[in-house]
Image 1 (tube, rainbow, N blue to C red):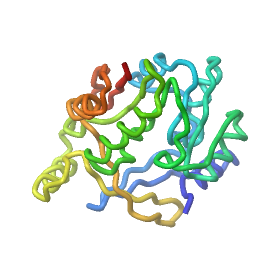
Image 2 (cartoon, one colour):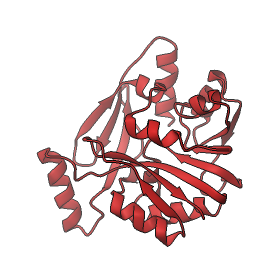
Image 3 (tube, one colour):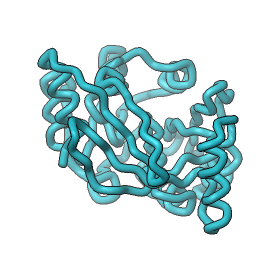
Length: 232
């Protein structure tokens, strides 16, 4: 069920409705549908996008929130996303090259820049999987190319429900930043999926394991940060 695409389509048609992200402990966070369309980047994203060069792949491009500004800046940007609906939205919003596909199977390349915005390191599902993802993307880079990634240090919180979730992960032998989620939209629930937020020290280690150098941006008060992972 392409629930985020449905939410984006509704927002573009003037029928906005929030998107819920439900965690497996019952916590639900609501996001405005505009959050998937808004091109205004946070501070950690703005600093990161300045490093984009040459041929750019936006891996998990969504509705083109970050791809479109890069294209407007004169870069050749290709959007890649699993969602047929979001790919269609990208095309209608003016992204010139959009491919429907899976980052694991349809990466293509070589690329000068691979963008993993929207905390898309989480596609790996856990820290080990995120490491496999980084190595997979690194193999598709030209020499001197870079992965531009955003993620979240989940320990930058004092919220009791988050702290309890982290403690539960530790007791179960799971990564602290691991999370199980599903999307809720207009009373429809999507399937559960695994996601992971990778802390800066973890990402630096994963980058080194893939033969990349890591330049980590400053942590925002929210725990969000950006990183440039460069191939020599």
